[in-house]
Image 1 (cartoon, rainbow, N blue to C red):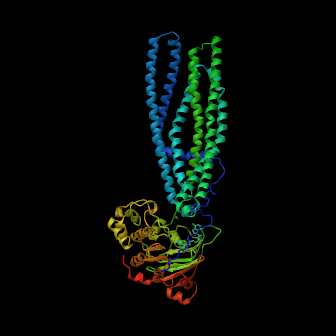
Image 2 (cartoon, rainbow, N blue to C red):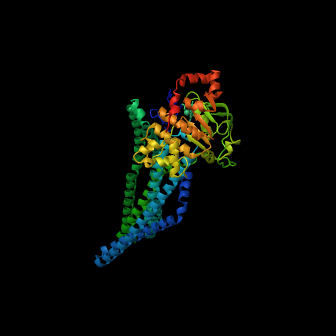
Image 3 (cartoon, protein in one colour):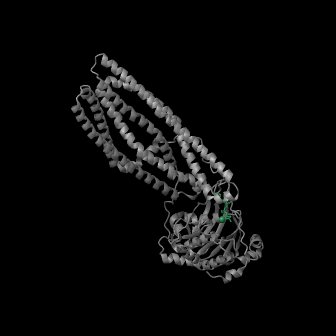
Length: 621
Ligand SMILES: Nc1ncnc2c1ncn2[C@@H]1O[C@H](COP(=O)(O)OP(=O)(O)OP(=O)(O)O)[C@@H](O)[C@H]1O
Ligand SMILES: [Mg+2]
């Protein structure tokens, strides 16, 4: 039997599954500003909505810690003036005990704040992750044609983690920062309004410098997240296409390309971190300047006869420290928040993609009869190129329609339209007389069993992989389906039989075995419409022939579309459609088309002649 397969078509501009290309053209943007910081913050806050009580409790604990800090600081100054200067040891001891007690309360309160915030952050991240994952599941197929799965994964992991870290660490800091700033300011004003005014003279400087640094770093944080997505995209493609890379001897190019992206990521990360790292030393310098100004002005006031004492200056400097530290931290947090917002924007960008929605009047369909009609269907993936042109066909219930044609002629595209993976440009697709646009996609898809050209298996047991065909199927039904698909024998020989857990995409199975499992899945689905896209292309001729027999049984009473490169399928079909350049150019039975002696006959003569039909006749499972 002739078994000629032509290399898969690489679509123009499609670099998925092509690890040698540069998949980054579409992501390689210049650093950007946040598009809608306010909107993104509001959306993040909405995620915190259900946690009001615990947030209020955390806030109260922050408040308690701040009050303790203010009282503790004041007690320190009091001790200087009343006990240390006067050498009153018992008094000093008493105040030390009080301080130890209130600081213990402060430790517990701080621990609880952190504990609550970790809970809030983790749960929020989990919710965002869940929503993003759900969105990804609902995105229409065309979205994945233009977006790298590695970049999507990066958004699901890195960007969400970034939000998580920021929430768990920065929100309490922001809380306690705000409370501390207000509390310390009040305490300072009570102690000495004049010194407070003097101390605040440097605050505008702090604001100015922080703003300057943040403006510089923000684009680099955004760039860093983008580059991380790019890198993940490249890694994902590199691992999936590893064999091809080795086979084509492109390891060096792949390494060089990886190094290039890695370098870009490192560069943007260094810029982002280095610029934000300037913040600490700059703040320290400004703070020291503030303490110096307070000490000098405090000493001047003390010597010029005001009621300011050494203890007051000491307390004041401690207050000032407790004021500037949260002020710096709060301003610094904006850096972290920038980075989280950049991540959040990337997450929300995916969430905002139009979902695969059904029309409002769409109906739930169950157990379709299987009468299929295409009328003047036109379809294109991209505006530039029309793939299917004026395709009309009719399949009556129980018929088997074989689709043949050269590679890239539009066979897979045609059957993808039946399940509404893609929507048509014009024309109509009717099943049982009803336009499929008026059917709920999920119910339509449940009515169609499909074995795709590129079978996918999950890293689960063989049994669960088959059960994907019908989730409610019993173990016995799974085994029965495997028998029909001739998969039972090889499954039994696996180390754990039906419980053998498959490697990623069935990596520990042969290509043919993978196809048998995919067939078993389709058998299990018990759908009235069956679509097989070269489902038997990778099994040996004996197995294939055995499957053909099983398939004939399976197809009984069902409408089947079989994209066939093999004679046995074609010969048994009720009608053969010969597709060329997206058009059905011939249709009829094998005999009719051979008699015409045109395109199909040519195809047959070049591909199928000499195929050994005896294998088919004599085979058993
Ligand atoms: N997702 C896509 N985005 C853009 N163009 C696509 C996409 N999928 C397929 N095409 C293009 O549509 C045309 C038809 O592809 P299709 O997969 O239907 O061919 P086919 O007849 O199934 O070929 P084969 O026998 O190799 O499986 C090809 O020119 C291909 O480049
Ligand atoms: Mg195809």
